[in-house]
Image (cartoon, rainbow, N blue to C red; front, side):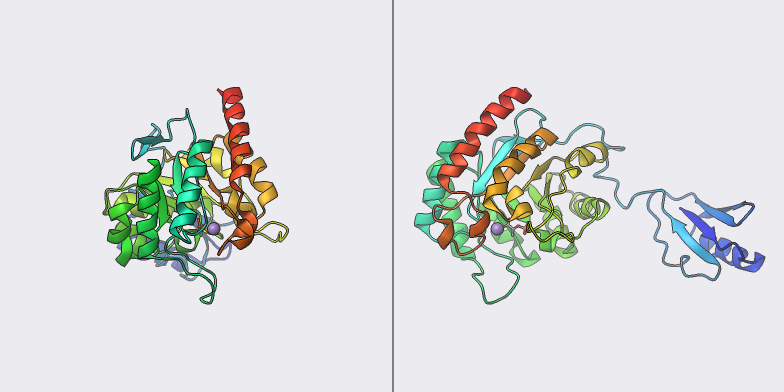
Length: 335
Ligand code: PEP
Ligand code: MN
């Protein structure tokens, strides 16, 4: 960490900062410049909390050199992490996985029908929400425990493993009993108690990027799970909030190669929530695979007009089948 002093900071202020750094257990190296003095903080083993120095008189700026994450960083773990989900391997760099299914589980008939359709089109994993994080409380909130049972049934019927969202630390045990992969939704990316609880289980976790999260915050959130001992974490880019309103979110596709540079964790993309528009999902699935994503997540519904959530972004089974044929050709081309 480097503490930059104001150009008119006095000797006393500089000394007070040096003392504060020493009280934190580090040594301070003042670097006098022609315009101002900077103070280097030495002896730290990682990220330093700057709370005690950043507001001291005479301090202009604090520059962090260490990142707030370490376990997820490629610096300390150069090899790619391969996450295993019920026999599937995610992050091999060879074959990306396709997770598909409805936004929410609505009934036995609906989830079994979709599971069969996505399986026959070539999907590797079923998705479906049982606990739904809806923006307002007056909309469909999910079938909860009943939804989990129906997902397990559809999974047994088709042999597809399933991913579903867990919204609270209290329900981690319940969801982990049956789900093959536990999803943390965008709205919960910084629910640190939930992340800690997920760090204690031995099931893989899919961590979605918060809609206003920087990449550093995204990785720091993943760090919480690894820090508790669970390194089976898959990151998921699902679009971020920008000034643009023509799409539901803005798909930040550069995150895929960027994450690959800085982290060893696999990253998948969810073009359904990123775009919010059915017509944009297939092109963005293909773009994600070209960008190097380890997989994609796609919402599919047999009757999107009647879907209880996210109908406008859901593909029909026929649309999904066409997409999978294109994906097959694309992957051959990319191989
Ligand atoms: C979902 O996958 O159903 C979902 C709610 O996604 P997100 O958390 O990305 O909005
Ligand atoms: Mn959805």
